[in-house]
Structures are given as structure tokens and as C-alpha cells.
Amino acid sequence: MTVRLKTVAERDQRARSILLVLATAICVGIAPLGAVGTLFSPLVFDDRGNLLNPLAWLGFFLMITFWVVCLVGPLVAWFFWRRQREPLAWSAMSAPLIWGLLMAIVLQFIPG
Image 1 (cartoon, rainbow, N blue to C red):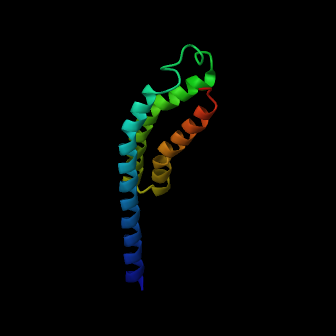
Image 2: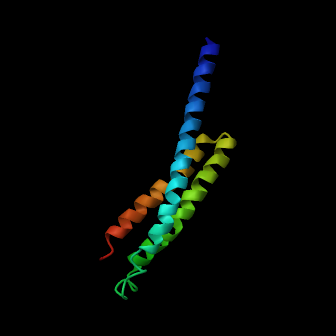
Image 3: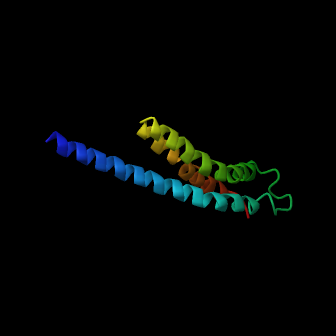
């Protein structure tokens, strides 16, 4: 019975590592989109309308750093994964998702 439980645990570990690889590939894939998105932020092409708007500056900061978070988040997640701290690895892997949601929320309040 212990052998069967061990193989199930190994199979679950393998499935979670495959999911981590897929999440890493997605984060690395959307990092260039974040870098290009910075060029189209509200402060780049605006005529002074948003220069005094603090939400525009926050959105600009979130856009600039999004691609960095997309690259650093999976790197930190793999460090935690190798040290057998899986919950911290998944929380680090969720950083780009949370960052992107925060960026989308902030950009909704900037007048276009």
C-alpha cells in the first residue's frame, strides 16, 4: 500500500512540475507584450492631460515593471521549487497575474 501511495505522490509532483513549466513559458511569452505595452501607456502619447494625474503615473510604473515581474516571478518560483517550498513557489508564480490585474484596474480610471 505504501508503494501505491508513493507512486501517486510522485505522479502528482510530476504534474505540478509540468504546470510550473507551462506557467513559466506563459510568463516569458507575455513579457515582450508588457515591454511593447509600455510604449502605448497613457503618458507616452498624451499632451499634458495626464502629467498631473497620479493614477496615470501609477499605470505607467505598472506597465514599465510588468515585463520585469514576468521574468523575475518565474525565476523566484523555481528557486523556491528547488528548495521544496512549493506554496511559496506558486505564490511567486502568481505575481505576474496579480501585477497584470492591478495594471488593468488602474488603467480603467485614467481618462483617455
